[in-house]
Length: 332
View 1: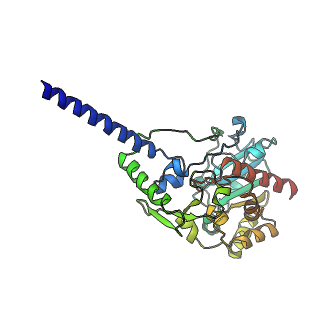
View 2: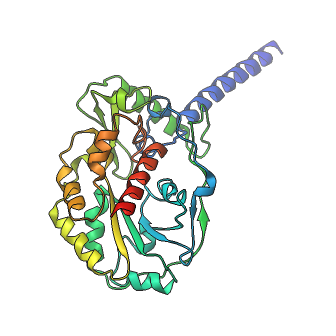
View 3: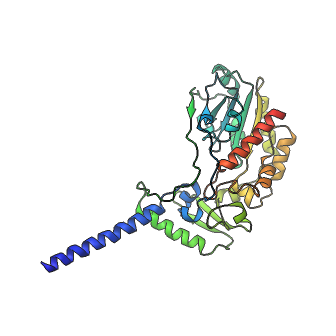
């Protein structure tokens, strides 16, 4: 009987310890950012700590075509409707369309498509992240027929003001938490390394680079380490060739004014890539604002202009971009 009790106690202690270990690793696998998820990096180390601005949920709305003053074509930088609140707050009604709905291209009949959906506004804002700008511009010039669009109103929940302190991701495997633990140890143990690449299944790679002013720019615990998409670091710079393609796309529109918001890659802002010429030409040709120069200036003022654990702008960064967009359309 004593031996039986001993084995039961031993089993319960082992089970309890195993449960604690499982909970620990499942907590590590609770990702908030796309870069921490791709690289399997801990949110404790790379998640942002600075609180973000509160946004009125009534402004986070995409209107129907017939009710809209402005149509936005955008990617993941636009999908949460955050920067657009700078427009909706000023009584503009905005319809947001995702590039995926258009197969990543603006065909020559896109203007006719908007008219057929009873869009009565006069402005189209085309937002694209830097790494996709040339791809989308090239695809647009070789497309004549657009996909049919669904017309609907939609709303978004407000973005997080602060990250949750603790969470368990039961959708992930414990092995993911274990990988996250060792990847994070590898990352933070050598913060001054030129770069560390962490593989992920499917070929995506996350680049970790030391940043001299990282703790001025980011609020995460290991702020001296910048987290980027490896593809961004190697992506070719945009040139006047892309500017020429944008001009040709604009020439296919006759009834609407077109504004381009080309959002710099996170790596372009924080790793000193020489990218200024394209945005200067974009602004010089009255195609859209020079977001690159504005972001370079603002990165020292807005902590987490881009999120440390993500490829995207923070809500504060998105609101700043929205203000630049509003100023541009009201002065040009």
